[in-house]
Amino acid sequence: MRACNVGIFLKSGVAENMALRFEASYPQGICPGWSVIVKGETSSTENDFEINFLTDSGDQIAFHFNPRFSESTIICNSFLSSHWGQEEKIDTFPFEANEPFQVEIYSDREHFQVFIDDNKIIQFRHRMKHFSNITKLQILNDINISAVEITRREMYE
Image (cartoon, rainbow, N blue to C red):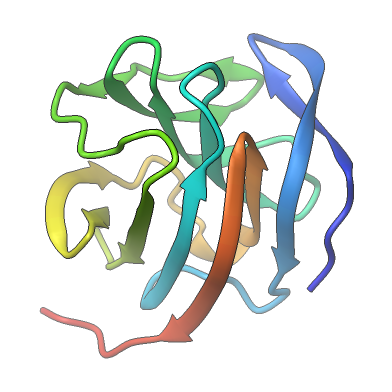
């Protein structure tokens, strides 16, 4: 587990500096069957935050979870082969600035399942088929993290 002050993130093929709040690498892969729980609160309504599941090289994002306070929406996507995929937008916005929350992202064989405060809000179909390549978790930008829990769960059929 490693944390830094600044990270590099690819957005539309351009590297941008964003505040890196948490990063962890799992060489054996973190999909499928793993659950990531992030507890925290945002520090303002001005900035957004991201939870990304990446390849070890960091040049591909298997799953990008991005609540956007300015738009009151959540964007989910992937960045594969140097291109963003089709955005999936959720108009349900259960976050409030400066209020605590819990996000759980569970990966089964078909989807990333996303729960916010124990309420399921989306299932995002896997776009990267080689699960063993998904080895890194990053949390970026405007978020105060109180806990990150990464655990292996039972696989549900």
